[in-house]
Amino acid sequence: MDKIVVKIADYGIAEAPGILVTFGLGSCIAVALYDTEKRTGGLCHIMLPNSTGARASGNPKKFADTCVSQMLKELQDGGCRADRMVAKIAGGAGMFELPNKEKPSIGERNRDAVLIELAKRRIPLIAEDTGGNYGRTVELHAENGDMLIKSLRSGPKII
Amino acid sequence: MKQPNESELDFLRELSNIGVGHAATALSQLIGRQVGMRVPNVSIVDITLVPELMGGSEKVVSGIYLQVLGDARGGILLIFPDESSRALVRLLMKRDEDPLSEMGSSTLKEVGNILASAYLSALGNMLNITLIPSIPSLAHDMVGSVVDIVLADLGEVGDTAFVFETEFYDIADDIKGHFFLLPDPESIDVIMGAIRSKNG
Image 1 (tube, rainbow over the protein chains, first blue to last red):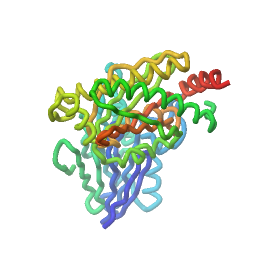
Image 2: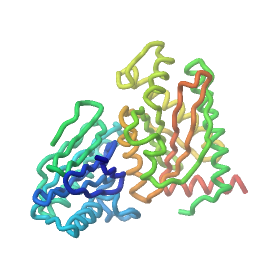
Image 3: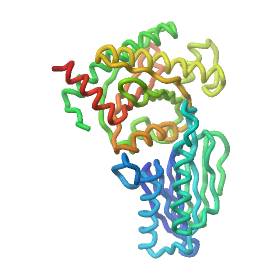
Image 4: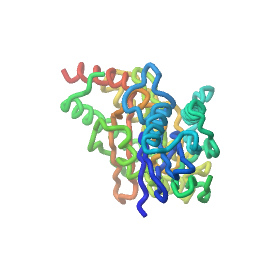
């Protein structure tokens, strides 16, 4: 079966037994929302924490807040319900050692922003694989809600 | 931000060709072998397409990232495919080293430092602006994960990246790379202003 590819700053939706995949996340985060009864899920690949900064503009799907809410709305329009949903996230690495270390990295800020969005919508985060200094490729299996994570550092793992 | 027009982009490409020429000379001296670099393309691209430009998100690369400080700010990202980064390390160290080993990574960072310094000083001299590279940092991983931090920086203010694609070529043709100058959007104005005053 062909996997549905989710590009950076985008999201995709699949029903069981579909598979969504997004490649090469560094500081970006993949957020999966999965309706456990309808066995339908969405996977997004966000780059930045939020769309409300003074300098922020452009494609709303690059930000955690606006992308998660657009994806959730499309899932709900398709018959999914937020109260049956669970969330899993992966990514948010710090790939480079940057000189100004006192600030939280973009990866950490992305993770925080995603957690806030999920909390606002009362969707429980049931698993995550975040941080570190390595890239990840992430799949969401709509069959059972499994998130498969591949990296060059270790074998594939399922959360 | 005023978008540069075609002739300004052409002029910028010419300046960059001179800049990378200096960088290539520095690299040739370092590895004791003639290396050339050219800039076939200066373009403004949708940031979400940058991983594709570099061969697809999962391709394994070494990325060396430096921040640009001074009159214009931004980042420089050098991307070497896995094989090329190993070939560079072999040329410099006279033995095989993993790009992530201490020797391998400091060698690649030094290559990045030399290329970026030569390029920025040439570009700065021609435009009468000061451009200084920060210390380099290295990642060796899937290209998507290596570039996304830079894209996120740019994405905070817009949806486009100003990309100088650079090819490395040498006699044996086993070293290839990409050189991305990623000015902050405000800094594009500084660079374009300097170009307009030069270009008349």
